[in-house]
Length: 373
Image (cartoon, rainbow, N blue to C red; front, side, top):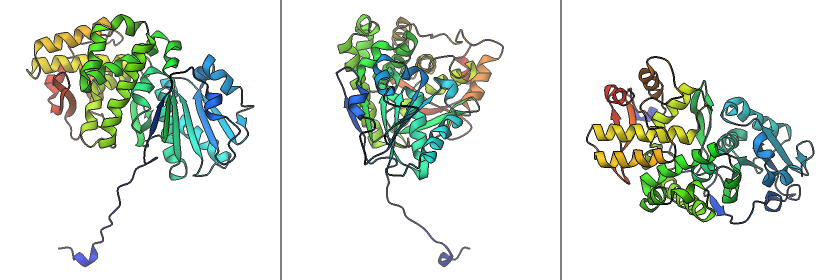
């Protein structure tokens, strides 16, 4: 029996990593990052701006990029990384850290990610690592980053072809959202963002879900008023969740609706070959079918959800057309078992009894396989 005199317990105060709060500003005007940040003119704060090769050539970003000569403007730095999921690696994260180390950044300085979910995730993760943590800010330039990825402090990178396997909770100090960036996105990027947005409607906001049902023409045509409303609704819904459960101990898990299936699909297809939001939408469909078969939700609810998803062009079939070969169900399930959210050897899924009526449950392998055939 252990002598209590030989046991030492240390109690820690509740802490907020990265920042004690996040200020999200919605800008209705055209993006002007030169005016927003005034690169080279802040003598009291050094900033390492991080973006990618695609974002750096966007018309609304070029003037800002042109302020830097060989990546330097006064005390500020600009690092341009490769674009897309293939570059969401620990090597890219360490490139951000290396840039700050070589420039003698201090813990009082700041990293600023300008880009989509990949850039926001990696910049935040690098901020959590550099000298055990400095502040970060984001300017999301994709719909997916505006409605989801930039908000809530989940940072990280892919590893060994597994999605977001390394990371930290490190919320941004400030987020500047310019919905006008949506107008210049490719159709694939825009639809990917809609995948996360419809997920938010299913989880938390009946009015948002009704927009997807009844305002599809405006939404698909990127009507400025509708897209601004969708972005604000998604941001407010996610903010309310992460404020209560930053480190995903309970209710934040619901935000993974469609993600366990979706991440497995992305991995099997090769990261970057299927847009994240498309994979999430396919995962939502698989979970809806599973719920109907197990009589968790009604057939009519399942049919309606699948109909809405199909209307936007998302695949709802058991086998995604971009996946080929034998034993697809088993291969997907083996990947799902590596999901970081599983508390045991069983796969934990987010399920719905109906609109905004959500819970989590560990599901038997045979039941998961039944919706992948």
